[in-house]
Image (cartoon, rainbow, N blue to C red; front, side, top):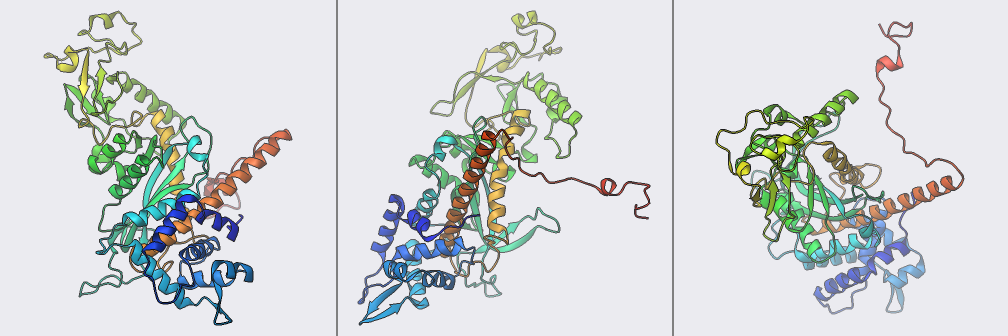
Length: 506
């Protein structure tokens, strides 16, 4: 994979947004007696070059990357200057001191484990510079997730003091072989990765934004705030937001409600405690984010997501039950207004089922399900043609598709894009943000290095995507089928060694 060179790194820091951020930081630095040799722009370039070579996020590596440039580039960037008639090369202490000044300018007077507005603005500008401008037109869907970033500092001892004042104890769950859930001391890093729209073309799955916060803060509202603020500034255009049950299970005001207010459609995996009937509204049953007829067979409410190893027959049966359950759903009749209200109508009036309480529906053919025992005392949803649904109803579970239908399953499958982003930054062959990757304490230093790593990662992802598309166009022009990605083989011992053969194990 082609790595980022100095020219591409300079193109990132010279974008209008990044130039404005660098100028703002420079203006906030103290003025000394002697002119500063190394500008902030050069330090930013050093961080990008360090991560382009997949080096650890150490200031000594930044110094090495800058000193390894050509003589012409060193003089142009301020790494080598004439001092009293003799050339003077940038020292590590100068890099360390300038980094301390930058961290002070971007940090808070009283650190609390959350990024200041200036720090988040710099991160957004750097990551936005690495995202192709045409990508916002190709896709507006995001997949979000958080991961752990362990601090280099030791956890607090008996005195409760640690060298990293903005780190805290957090919990991480191992999902791989021999990985167990455990506690760690550090931060939560949340990523928002661009994925293709449901009916859109394939796009490079780059990171659109990131946040880093101490584990003492819930990472969900931290990322949601960054997304809604970026959408308010016009930097991001939200359509589909895909998340796992860790996000969906949060308080609605921390996740679902702000994103809906930003005109985003949620595609989430519901937490087991949020699945199934959760009360009523106007007599209609609240189930998995929708309202259903009070006479819906209870057996249909037991529908759960498919297992990963489900057979073709099990998938077909599951989808058939989901389609049958959809016939009992009260259908949406209006879009959500500014107050978060919308109206839904009786499924019998919509012609989806037969009900004795709706005389016209009994004229429908018998291919539709029929309510055999209507409510003895019909509730509001059965006596009115439509009912109004406030935003407080199904506030946590409402989403774009019926859960867990076939449409939801296909849409939710796009969330693997953010899993790839998390895997990439933790891959020992690339970034590897394990303990010791960054030895800076606090929140500002690791955030700057992580933003630089993600910007470099975005450029590499775009390069690989363009190379793959060019190759497919060449193969199509030559009359060959597009190259397909290799799929992991799923073999068993029975496949490798036939049972009963001479080579079979005893």
